[in-house]
Image (cartoon, rainbow, N blue to C red; front, top):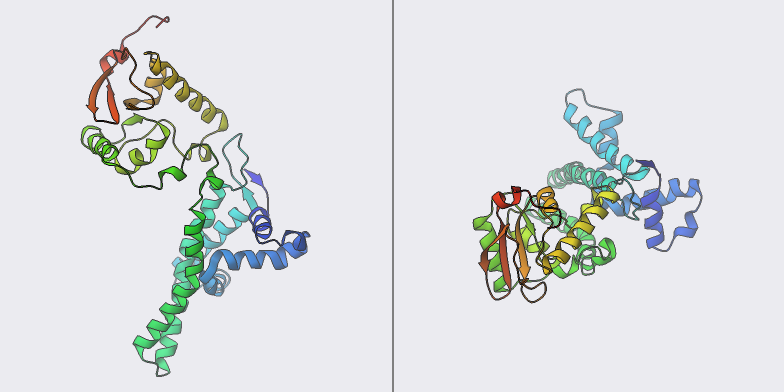
Length: 306
């Protein structure tokens, strides 16, 4: 945990080409910060006065409003003032502190919706048809929210700039062929919730999405685990596949990671000439083969040379 105020604000100013204009602390707090909050909160910014009122002039009959308002403000303060990362990592985008910001923005919608409801009642009270008032307010709210929505989809057309090249995340925003779906259908029926599946990178998304299984090394490990642990597990996964192609297996790794299934793409990893005795083939189609770990054989002690 690192005290690092202004991280998101300075990054936002750089993104819109205004970083050099707000280099001093005074300009950062009085100009850049309001610009960032308005851009980040969007339509929710109309609820800011109600949030501040709930904190500084609390209603004795509504403790819940006070708690919700504090939730919004505290989340913003944590995100804007601290960097929270697993040990050993340095990120341009801080995934942990960013979570506090996201949760605050969710709750801030409650106060924004309250303002919109008040506006609706005001309009109806002055003779505007209820249907017209509702349609107008909804249209304005949607219109102000659409830019951020469009930005989201444009942004995710190229997600690798956020996640880097650690995992082929962008390649998974695709449809899947019948063989892949047949594989996930088998795992859904045969596996128990939480079973660990060892598979290639491009199968991570369908396995995690369409089944109840886990994987030894996924997309966001770097955001939740110390760098040393990520590096060790990543190396162990690579060594597993290297040994697999030779017909060998790291039993210690299989035990540690709790691997229950190994999924092999027959056109890439291929099937080794000798399948280790701790595995038995339980599924096969034109693209994939699935091997299940024999827990009894895994528990047997083998010589170090194996």
